[in-house]
Structures are given as C-alpha cells and as structure tokens.
Length: 84
Picture 1: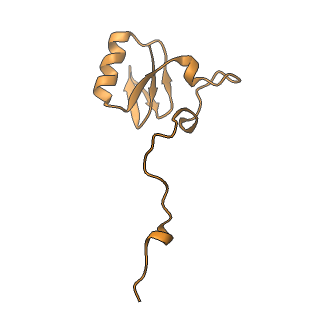
Picture 2: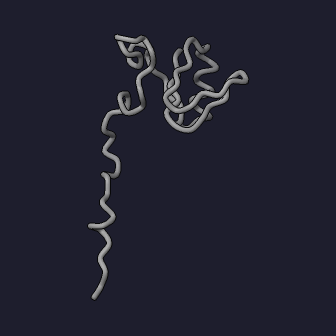
Picture 3: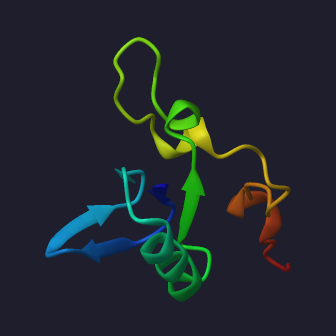
C-alpha cells in the first residue's frame, strides 16, 4: 500500500517524510496502523493518482488535494473596520 503524508511530518523506519511525500510499498497491516494513529495526517493512495506522468515524481500537495469546501481566503483589510 502507498501512503501520502498530507500534513506535518511522519517518521517511519528512522526516516522523516514531509507533507507531500509518498511512502511506497508499505505492508498493509503497518499502513493501516499508521493511518489509524495519524488521524487524517496520512492517507492511502494509489501511486498512479499521485505521480506526475511526465516526471514520475510525486506532485505537490496543491495538485493532489481538491477543493474540500474549507474556509475561503480572507482579505484582512476588508474584514476589519475602524470605527470613527
């Protein structure tokens, strides 16, 4: 099973994996345990979904994660008013 580090850093077998890194060929039982413990910070993926066809390297997080309906960007100057 392949795992994608979605947030933060994962240390596995003495190596640190940052957000956007893909761990390939992890044993299914170990992968399920990592996903359960990581609580959403690591997700299971197919390697074909993550790799760029041109380079074969993992794509950036922004290319992988679709719009999840989260909080939209905010312009602080428009949201803060000064009372006069």
